[in-house]
Amino acid sequence: MEYVNLSNENAIGVEIIRDFVAEDELIKVNEEISSPNKVEWLNAHEVYTNKRGLEIIQNHDTFALKLHNADNTLLENLPLTKSLYQRTEGFIRGLNKFFPTLYGWTADELTLHLYDNKEIGLSRHRDNTRFIGLIAIISLDGICDLSVRHNNEDIDYQVTPGDLTLLRATDLIDSDNEIRPEHSVVNLQTTTRLSMMLRANSKPDEIVPGFKFNNWSPEQISN
Image (cartoon, rainbow, N blue to C red; front, side, top):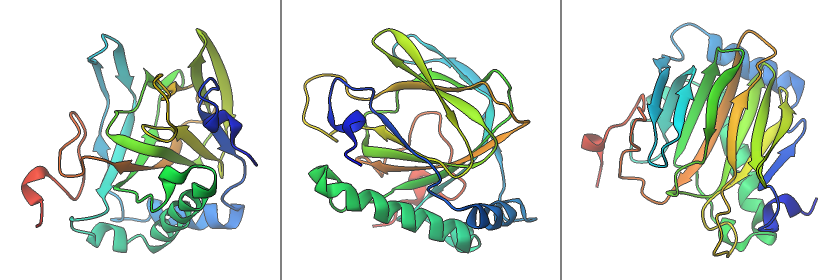
């Protein structure tokens, strides 16, 4: 696989790796996440206007963990989820032969998203410029469409359990153009959809506006 959709600055900026997670591992991870007292969901349902003037619609709950300089007790209680995150992080680092900027790529946060709206789970947006390299999203349960705006057209990809979606982020490739794909989560074909997102943060000690972590706040920064 040559990842031309990521390496070509004029391409869509998204690659989907089908069946990255085997079915038996998916079952175990989902069972772990749904176990009592393992995950405390935060209500992230919100409608707001971003800096570009776009109305952002969020129809999901989150469980978000800082992975460094934070209390990792909650993650230690999810060993299978932790193992999947570490394997995914290693996979992304291994892509440095295609993208040298991914050498040593380190996830700063792990976020579970539980979407619950049939039409819009998360409306069209770009991830913040502070997130670098690649953004990795693993589909754990449920089916939806990832809709990507490219050349003024919406291109829809059906995402199913086990798929790994890679979104191009800041500094993956050298370009003076905007390389971050504008995307949305739409058309849920199941009652809910559960995903796990990993992001590397160039400003790890700063809070992301409007984003809450279960195990971290700026006051908890450890030197």
